[in-house]
Length: 612
Image (tube, rainbow, N blue to C red; front, top):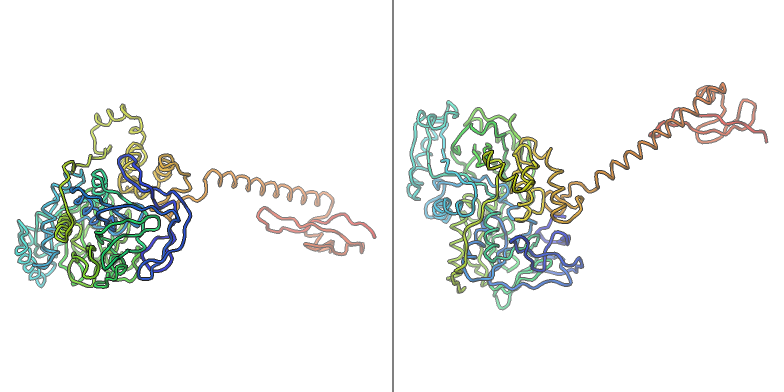
């Protein structure tokens, strides 16, 4: 059952939740110690389940939500001598909105001057070179290009040029059609002008989130996965604790970075000052063989609710097209649709005609945490002291994340949290090995040092067993967790070859049966039954059927030998299927139905008659 902040019973399987602090390969997790549960009632009428042996965790700051923003805040607070707990409802970080983020690092010309979106986008963009370097995360400044498809749209380009200049975007240029096509030869002939920002970039959003969490944990932050918040405890109007099904986190400072559920978290503290209004976006990933269609991220002129459908070169060499922008009430709807597919490719091909749906290798949808206000909400609660909201973080939230983290730290300081710099803070997260990116000689040295590097798990992306094991030791607990960390299953066959191999390694490394390995957590078991057992059962069933068929054929042949064919026996009235009938001599004849394997009736075999 999916865990949710929505009102009603929150039944959280114990295997997906973690209590009792422990250290595994540099990660602090909270492990499940009991399956006993009892009903509780949380704030604002929310109900949940928790263990009768719930653990109490003491912290200075509790951060709710381990998306890219919550993870960035956790890492920023790890710079200080504080006890920080990062709480996530999903079984792994980035499994909410951040997993489906487009990965665009915006230049800053889209946002209205004077807003938090504008200032934090510019600040965050400038921080990305350092943060990507420290965390060993793929990042590339490929530039952003907003294209005008008609003379009427040229005025919109000029407006955004002025807006970007006021926001402080460096290097902005207006290009005519020839200049735009010289920069991007794949643009449509209809393009008449473009706005170019060289500081725009692309990053892998989920790898960034994983790296932020890893580095935060390495610097003392406790990460609680699979822990939906069920209530917030207040005393005299001040936050005192956060409750999850298996733990109570005593903290007088709480940062609400819960994304799509930020308003529900606020409501637990009696704060209804804003509302999250989810907006769904569908995106499509194209094969790497067409990865050279464009170099820059191609934008159309924006709509009132969206930056439009983009053509995005990813840091991994694919092209991605999307997203759509559809307001929805369903905070868990991640379906893709025919309508969305048609809208995405119509818009993308208008700008870059060579984009083709024939090259799709994956489709997915994400939900942005749009809100009732026109800007980011980053402020202390006006109702509950000690609660800081970080809500409505839609685009350019990924770009702004590092700057948002600094802003939140400053708000906590201003609100009275004592913050002393931690001398031992280490901003560097060691890079995981990417076997596919190494030279032949480097690969040979790795294989010689560890034979697991010589066993290829994913052929499409050349991912080795050693890389999968490393991902698990860094925190992967699901097939998607391995996929997003290593790219095993992200190639053309989308896991057709490597899925069973990844499942087997997860089973071995986590010490669980392969039937318990999930795609993305509870409710997503991939193989509920052992394949070999099913095959054995299938072979046995085939054997029984074959035996029945052989017996039926033998009986039919015996009838024929005795001069009584099946049809003749029925016509003569020697019996009826399922019972006895009068024989030719007026005596009662017992009968037996003759069936093929699978139960199809082929006739009736007469049995010898006896007088009475």
